[in-house]
Image (cartoon, rainbow, N blue to C red; front, side, top):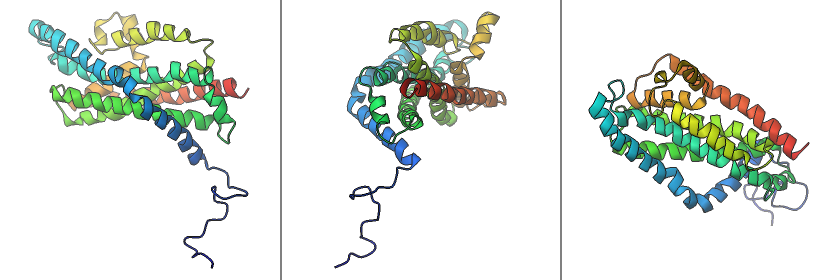
Length: 279
């Protein structure tokens, strides 16, 4: 007896023998994202301290400990309590650190140690599928980390406006602005020792001199100008504006800079991964 048309197997369905229709681009990307989501689901406990506990301790030490001295001595930073000044910056730092931790050693391992990227390319997947699918999961991790920090910091009355919820999508942009170029850097890295240079000479100075702990206009002009070129400073300015609900026209420039890092970073990452995996 013939099955009703609504329950009959669709011709070309992938669970049937015979010719199968090729995967659509979105299916290929979601297949990659699904793999990395499963990996993160099984390993997220390992990142619990670095993603959530460590920033909280940092906030307590800098915001409440040092903040009490700053507020007592000078009334805060430009009239703002030090905790309210440093907490939005830490949201951007949290997004940056998530991007860096997920885009260096783990990506290098997929190229070199377990060669998972090579295995994936033996299927109908393409380089752009690997890059976009993996970045989706990294972006989700950065967004969750930023949201968690906003929630915890809000408990300590670190923000004065409900617009602080916009700090979460800003955290997403900061994550991508760092993660995408780092995928390109990792694809070109000759060894994992390169990441020590990234952490010590790029990430740490960025965290210290990008307006997180004090305004960059306190720096010599050369260092202040360098801060303007970093995606972290633009992310800090956006999160700080969201925390107070005070937005300015220059925020469009901050947003444009982050999008520029994402756009050029995509080209840099895609060409690097193509050269590493295909050429």
